Amino acid sequence: MPEPLSLLERWHRLHEHLSLRAYLLLGILGPVVLLVLLNTVSVYREALESADTAYDRTLLASAKSIGEHLDIARDTSSGSGTGTLVTATVPYSALEAFEADNRSRMYFRVSDMQGRMISGFEDLPVWHGQLPARSVYAALVDFYDAEFRGQPVRVAVLLQPVAGREGVGMATIQVAETLELRHTLARALLLGTLWRQAALIAVIAGVVVWVVQRATRPVRQLSAQLQQRGDGDLTPLLADEAPRELQPLIDANNAMMARLAQLLDHQKRFVRDASHQLRTPLAVLKTQVQSARRGDIDARQALAEIEHTVDGATELANQMLALAKVEQLRHQGQAPVLDWDHLVRDVALDLSALIADHGLEFSIETETAPVRAHAWALRELVRNLLHNAIKNTPEGSALAVRLRSDARHAALTITDSGPGISAAQREHLFRPFAAGRSGDNLRSGAGLGLAICQEIVQSLGGALVLDNRLAPDGHITGLDATVRLPLANPPLPDPDASR
Image (cartoon, rainbow, N blue to C red; front, top):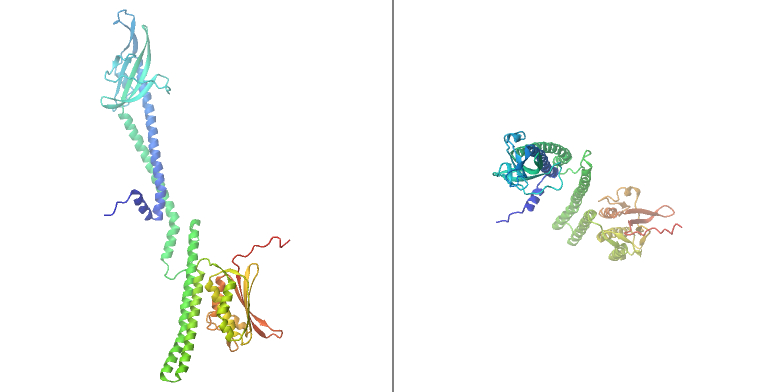
């Protein structure tokens, strides 16, 4: 049996399933309702204090009215006959003028300073308290709450000086009133306050709902716009009227859609090119196998032709995978810092056998050049350019590799002695599967070598330039392939250099 969730866990689960509109309403109306409730309690207490003050004044007036019916008489019960006592002739009708209605009752008791009862209700408890140090009334009066005959009452105590022909004295006048009228007034004040506060909450809730509806309308419009789109629609969102707070979200979404569109276009182009380019070598391979089965040509020759076709298809597949991998590198994180010098020499060493087979006069000059790139990308770049230069350089001719760096860039230049390229070939030389020819020589192999190089260089923020070298008489003596990449940590300019 699962354990019961705590109140905090229930609140978190409820919070997770709240909509933005409900969250805003709860977040705005919750504090407002809490403040209104606190204000209601405060107003109710202040109203009760005001009612007590008003009714306490009535009690004080009642006590003073009773004090007007007091007198001083000679005390004949004493042996000397010289003593005095306080007398009172207070009819209950004297209090009727202070009774607001029949829902409340008033009681009184008049005592002397020794606590002996003079007039009133004998069972009303005698006051034994003390007068407050400070009072808002110009009288010796005190107010307190008590219980009389099983009912709560409010009592006013007045110490009233009494003067007559027989002398002076002091009396204690207690006037008690039941609390029905005060409670009725308190309930009326409470209901009136609650109605006003409820109306205020209703007005605030209506305003909040209207404002929240207006504020969340752009979000609902964006949601409807996205739901109405087709599966392949990656066009940017149009939200010119959206508030500024939503603009970063819209811009980020449009940027993500642009990246997805670019990625999908690349995948579609890759699949289209792959299906088109692989169809030809597979068809040739099938024809060669069928011809070998029929015995049209010698078995060794048939195997040699099949091997050549398979090698070409393998090279094409590897180049296509390399082109796809370059696109993946664009979306990876920041590349590490590598020394281009070591990679160039490693690639030249790997192709040394091919250079020796062509009998080329090879030279290499490099220096330290830290660049930010993935090792595979740099190796593929150098390998394609150097391999292309080897294939297009006549046997016994010169082939040179130079790596130099300046204040901000590193430049790799591969100089061959081949036939170069024409102006017409430059227009489509970097396009995939666009083989450039110079005379009878194929410059780009399967049509992907220079395209791969161009993609790698662009992903690294560099530039690839192919320049023909011209002799004084104007004919082409070779080709210079130059790659410029930004240094990983270019040195700051020397402030003393300009002095």
